[in-house]
Amino acid sequence: MRWLYLFSSVLLGVCGQLSMKKGVSLLPEVSVTSVPSILKTIFQPYVFCGLVLYGISAVIWLYVISKFPLSVAYPMLSMGYVLVMVLSCILFKEPLTVIKIVGALCICFGVFLISR
Image (cartoon, rainbow, N blue to C red; front, side, top):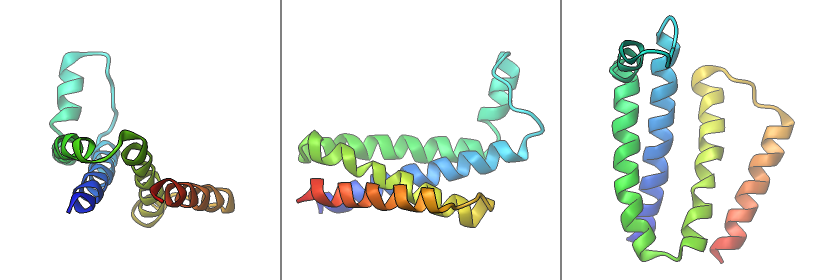
């Protein structure tokens, strides 16, 4: 069951990142130079949803690190990098190069070794 929480935390973090990316891509400009522009960005629906998902992920993460050694749990977050890379290619048409694929495979292999 603890593995389910770990993967849920990673997946919610990934969904949060993708949602925030979608939200900022819909804004004409993202600026952090004034409170109104920051609030406009935060309350863009996709950005807000992404922040909520990211927050839920963080709460679940607290449970995860209470059940796993941090030296095992923390590297598992890097699977989020791989998922974001693949889903960004699909959802946002970002390029998926050979170098990115090799890097993702290295991450997956490293996570596999650490989980043993």
